[in-house]
Image (tube, rainbow, N blue to C red; front, side, top):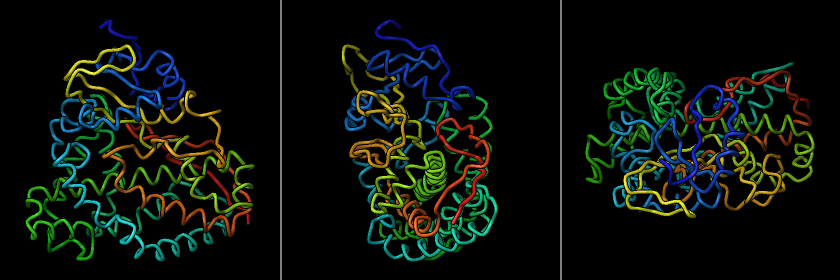
Length: 391
């Protein structure tokens, strides 16, 4: 393969997963599209090219899977992430119904009150784990209930969500380890996420309502409920963790936010830009396509690196710096185009609720030790973060 620059590194190795950004920069510096020799696919890492690829959903298609391995791509047709219009348009309308601003407004008071209670509780402690004690709380305690699974299922959602994203990587040991976990959860869903067992006001119940209305088929329910389970848990947990970690590292930015609390929304965007919870997904070309001077052929698979685009020096001034005053209109931390994250407004609500509670109560955030990063094929986030709030 000599049609363009080549990068001979395993992007899914432990080393790269734990320290990805030098590799992403090397990919950006090589060209608009780079051939990944070890993975047999192209990668796009520059901001403009990533945005253009995500916008061109008719050329960079999702219906042949968005993972980097054939097994996962063969087992995930017909869900929101791995579908193209018109199917995608139809499914998104159904799945997004409980995630519209009007629907979220009904749960907003509960989420905000829970965030206040949590921050008050953590202020009384000498130290805590920013991940298990804080970042996990809202997604696991409230959002999992909103999804509507029985209690036993909610307790297993964290393990399941992580495994789902590992399946989107190349065929490595993490992917192999994730497969039995996902199979177990699918079995659980088929046996327990039934109309008589899910919470009547939950999101899954809404999918069964869509069946009754003739909008989808019964066999589509389990596929679509998985669109709720993965993205609503791990990605938000990791985004909250990154927000805490960054403010702990950049005390001046926390001071700036205390002075101007109206920058909370921008701070959330900046955290997601700088530490994108999702590294990237793949697409398949539906036709020959040229990026810059590099020609890609129909049927080739392309890894689109959101996390690289969000640190592109061609777009961002000092891209590796956390700056809550930065102008942010086009980061791709939530994706872009028709596949933009369907739950991003819920994630923003959870993150803003926590920030708002902290702004009113926390004068300083102290990082007490080295954080531990998770090793996941697609997600970037922390497993643990020793931290302390000072009133």
